[in-house]
Amino acid sequence: MPNFPYEIMHDRQDALERLELCIRWGQYDIHVLRFHLTQFPPGRVIGFHKHAEYEFHFIPQGKGKVILIDQEFALKPGMLYLTGPDIMHYQEADAFEAMDELCLHVDIIDRNLDHPDTDSHSYDEWEAAEARDCIEKLRMLPLYPTADLHQAMPRFLEAYQACNDNFVGSYTTIKQTVIQILLRAVRAYDKASEQKQFPTRDMKAYRYRLALEYMYANYDGSITLEDVADKLNLSSRHIQRLFKELHHGHTFSRILEDIRLAVVCRELQESEQSVEQIAKLAGFAGGNYLHAVFRKKFGQTPSEYRRSARPPQPQ
Image (tube, helix red, strand yellow):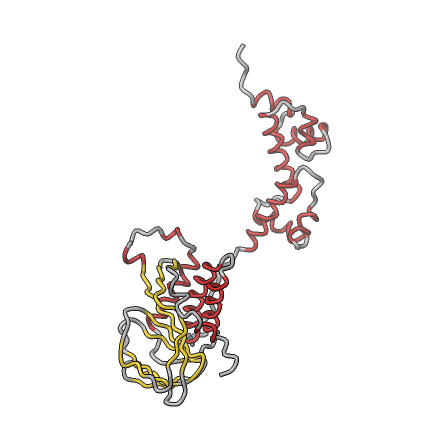
């Protein structure tokens, strides 16, 4: 067949198999045993046999048949099927037409079974959940071919080219293609219409936190409620509602004042700067204004606070 995109993989059939590929995915170790393109000449028969590992079979070109246990199925380009551990199967190319097959053999080891004390926090929980879902579905996939609906086959070529080109990140790219082949094969059989729930943020709390972070980073300037709203691409009214709901009913002005006063208190305790200098450092208009705000808040002047907050000096 002209323009067969996988033809290049015949040049170095063992290129990917020379790599020692062990992929850690969630709680699983996935050992790649075989990873290549092979061809069945016309009429070629491989009698009933089985493997101890999972074998993914993809048909990019040609036709033939497969018998899975005791059921016979026709094979044509664009199809895939899976044989799990100990599944007896028989393969045969068409009597007059060769059949190409992309093969991936993987041994999947559950570390939680071998090492039940494995720290589950050592991997991403959402990725681990997807890995468990995929592997559990692999173990239950029906024994019949289906169409490669989600383009797993091109991942073989992607891995082969990464191996040949040896660019920065080639090894990682190859490992990722293996995961993609597993995922896309499972999806090809997945008839469920359920929608997966991705990890999501509490947007209200998230926006509130971003607003506070922006205020803490810019309290020493002439920051306004509109500045914060513009930074978060929200309305001023929306930001004010967030503050009142999540910050004890306080307004933007009250929160900003409290941030600045906390800076003033720290500087009064730890530095020798004048009240005027501290006022400007904290974003107040000047020492007199700080004096009035501070006295109203704490019932004493900044200087009185400084004396009371510091331990007496030894004589």
